[in-house]
Length: 222
Image (cartoon, rainbow, N blue to C red; front, top):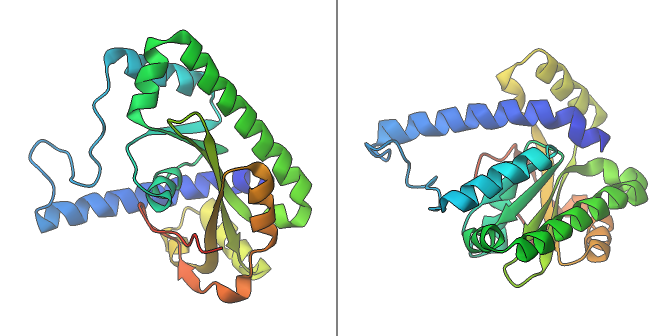
C-alpha cells in the first residue's frame, strides 16, 4: 500500500504535534486533571490478562495499530481508527478483548477475523487500481457480535499539493498540517460494499478542509 506507507511518517508527526497542542490547551483551560488524565482520553480498565494479550497482538501484528475502546457510533469508532499510523488500524471493545483473554477459542476466532479482514483490504487496494491511490488509511472494527466493519479514509489533492506535503514531511515542517485538501471516510460491512462506495465518491460534493485533528468527525453520508 504505497500511498499509506509514504505518508505514515508524516501522519505520525502531525498526530504527535496535534496531541501535544491538545494537551497544552487542556492544561491552559483547566480541563486536565491532577492525576494526569484528560476527560477526553480516559482508557478502559483492563485485566492483567487482557493487557498481556493486547501486547501480544501488537507484537504479532507489527503492521497494525490496535485500539481498545467503548464506542457508540460509526463516527466515534472512526475517530479512534483515524489515529492509526501503521498500514492498518483495528478497533476492539474492552469486553471482546477480555473474552479473548479468557478463552483461547474466542481468541483464535477473532484473530482469524483480523487476518481475513486485513488480507481482504490489501487485495481491495490492488483491485481498485487508480481509485485506490486516494486511500490514506484503512481499518477494521471488530464488533462484539462476531462481525467486522471496514473503513477507508480517502484524500483528494492536486499533484502540486502532494509534492509540497512530501517535501514538508521530509524537511519536518509543521506548517504542512495546514494544507487544505478534500478528505472523506467511508464505512461498510463488507469489502465488496466498501469498494463500491470508494468508486462512487463524488469529490465535487466534498468541501476542502484542513487535516483533521485527533477525534475529528467524518462524513458517513456517502
